[in-house]
Image (cartoon, rainbow, N blue to C red; front, side):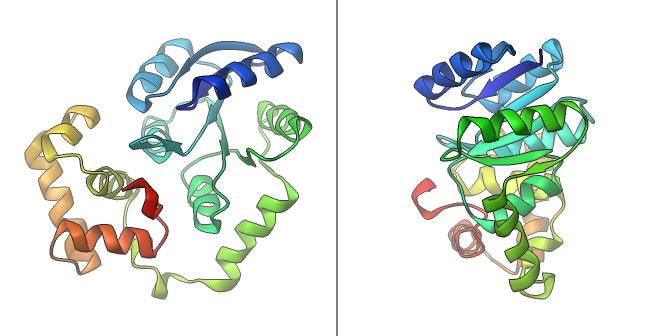
Length: 214
């Protein structure tokens, strides 16, 4: 039995996952649609495995991944998402995810991922492995200005382009608004953009976010 926590912004998806997991002998110890709430639960409950969607309404699963990486939490993350963007696969694995599974996959694929990560292994299904390979065969950091950003800067740029103010970001990340503003100014200088609309266009162009998310 593996203790699992669910993060998805659709209650029906969470209900379906809970039923599938419990039928296979796993225990769902909690669930949430909100990264901030989920982080508090994960620190308290310490499940072995986290199932995490990347698109959480106006928020991003990358926010939670970044916080778990920063805090060096032992919970192993399986990204379970509709996103088949090669960049998202590579970014999730770089930020500490142990597995990446597409929501269109068979239930057996998810069970295999849980078994693998519970044993300390990484897991990519055949389709996802091909997506990850595309990043290395089609791109390099010279064509990817986002590759120069730290995990914290990537977290903040995602929150900025989703319309959150420095005060709101600071509250969620436990930083002062002044510190958030400094991060924002620094990352905009790195990326060579002068305003938030330019930041949004760059984030969409390099597939850090999807255009329908903003």
